[in-house]
Length: 305
Image 1 (spheres, one colour):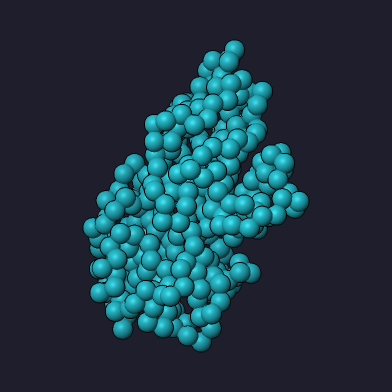
Image 2: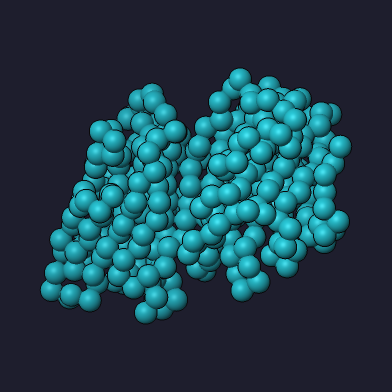
C-alpha cells in the first residue's frame, strides 16, 4: 500500500513518464546542488537512477529519476522545499507493466554546508519485493518500512557531480570506489599571485598533487594514488584566468575508471563536451581500452569574489 503523507499533494510531488525531461545541470549558471547517478537492475533491465540534492532560499530539495539505457525517463519524483516539513513518503509507479515503489525518509537527516545530507536518511527503490537500490545509512529502517529484502544484484555508483563555492579553497567528501573509504578532498588554488599561481590537491589533509604556473597549465592531467589505487585527475581552470565575468568556474574530474569511452557515454552528462576535451587533452581515446570498474567525480569550482 502507498504510504504517502497528506502534505505531499500533487503539487508537491511531480511524476514524469518517458516524455518527461531528464534531470540536468547547466554549466553556465552556478547552483548549489549535488547529482549522484547509480546503475542497477530493474525488471531484468539495466537502468540509471539519478538523485539530485539541491538547496535554495526555501530549503532543501530532492529529485529522483529512473531512466533506461536510452536516457528515457521511466518515472520521476520531485520533493519541493516548501513541503519539506515531514520529509518522508513513498510513491508507486507502473513501469513495464510492473510495480515500482520509491521510498524516502529525510525526517531525521542532518545536513552540513552542502545540499546533500550527511546522515540520518534513506532512499530505496523497491521492485518485486526486493530493494534494488538503497542510498543512505538507515538500512534497518528501510527494510522495516518497505517490507522488502536486499536484491541479489549489486547496484553500481556511476558518477557524482557537485558544485563548490569558495575564494581559494574548495572542499568536499569523496568516495572513489564502491564500498571504499570516504576521504576529505580539498582543492586549493591561489590565482592572485600573478607571477606563480599554483594548484594543490589534498586527500585527508595530505598533499597529493601540486601544479605550479597554473595559468599556463590551465588544462592537464595527473595520476594520484588513493587507497593504493590510481585515480586520474583532470582539470580545466581556464575560466578562472581568462573567462568572462559571471562564467568563472573551473572543472575537476577525478576518474577511477579504466575505460575513457565509458565515461564519455555516461548518463545525463550535461557537460560531456568539456569532459571529453579534458580526456582528449590527456591523451585518452579509443585506443586505450581496458576493463575495470569506472567511477567519476566531477567538481565545478565557482569563485566567490
